[in-house]
Length: 434
Image 1: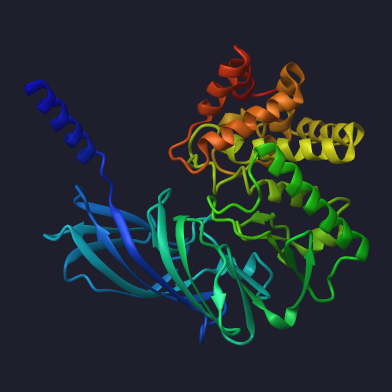
Image 2: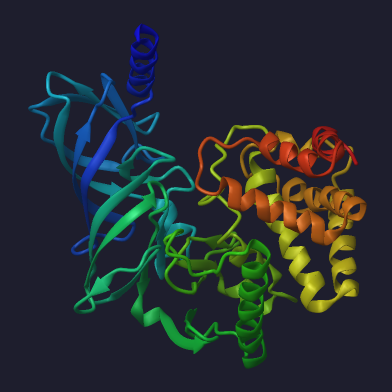
């Protein structure tokens, strides 16, 4: 009997130790009314249960010293400190375990203005160190979101919101990844919107006087439909999934930012209008569709961890090549591999050449998007393309939405299926030159 009591007590103690802070009743109000370009006014309230902690840290702030201005916080029942340099706000418990946080501030994000098209589009996201609302990373939360815009702007969110007119949007977002809220504000006069059905609505925003021709437009519709069908089959999970908070096909938002990458933002895909209209192919947009399954919103490996961008980007780029092989055939796939080799050869044995595992922030495209797929091609030739795709699919379904994640989780899964092949891949990811 004593032993039973001891074990029960130990379980309770372990449960208590593992208890994390809880954030409930989160209300977030964002306004673009009467705001200058690249500015928001933010008000938020939430209940914070410290659980067994004395303090809780949340991401908040951006790269500029003036990113947050006029910060007001009602801190009668708790203490707080805000560190602009570390982009953290820390709440300290006084006496009450649960307190109500209320705060509002003005937020400036110049990258939203200059990178994404000189004011025709503002894209607000957390992926580049601009934390425009407070959150605990890699947790899930419910949030009641309200957004106000002037008549001159249209609005797109990473999650669907209701609107009773053209300037007020609201919705209750349930169990979303805390850092996954992305907003796009679009200057109405600059854009043309079209809708297609594949089936299911597909909205496309193009910049007026920069629209693509009909052939490219039709190609986008055709490839989007084919890619969604292909990836849905491979991952054994439809694009639209209540479990993943994906309730519609992606909106395409093309901007006139210069030289900036494409982005998957859960509810919409942002990309360069110029590239879309003029590049020889639009395979990179297929890559963005693939991020619905493989990417930063599902595979929660932290920046700074070995192999972070092998997991977040290389796996998805390889699967994009698998779609090309499936849809266009082996010859087109072979040409894409030759291009990867050519691009990699340009930096091979130079200071830019490094082990794939060393890319822990997304700052070496050739290693992540060219060298990485060449490594996975070697593995595919050994165990078969279908088999490697199956293992990547199993990895996604086993680890999606779970934090923390390590690249060795993929190595272990590969070894479990094919003894020694995971170790072989691990070696290729660790060496400098292929």
